[in-house]
Image 1 (cartoon, rainbow, N blue to C red):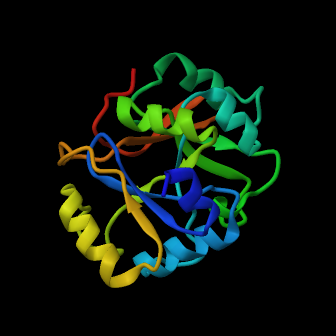
Image 2 (cartoon, helix red, strand yellow):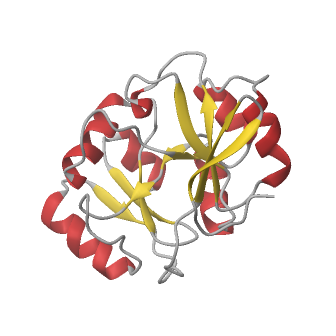
Length: 186
């Protein structure tokens, strides 16, 4: 089964990122997003971050094209840099919020997969909430076998581990670091 077929059937992808494996579903798919909340034991009101192959995929989610945050992020991507972006309307992954944390990842394999799929994915870490993120595809597979009905691990080997992406927001034109991570903010 291909990644696209699995997503269409309501499954969850486990995809490599710069630091760990992440759980991916279409961010607009309420059932897929709910599956991730169940898998992780994650609080329902907490939004899920997204990754995209390019800005066009973010715009397709409803990210505001003329936002100051998007203009700031564009020249810095691809990177392990997640930016809070305004949406034209909430989507399932935003948990009702008018914003979404998004990035165009530096991980080439993930960007290639996103390009093949033709749309963005959620990218919350593959692990139960409160536990360390999983970096080994075999560990991810074991965890999902015990808790998910339909899943596919996109096995590209063990990820680098370490710090997650840096998370920033813009407030009145100023960059606010919400989580110091892998990439420096410049």
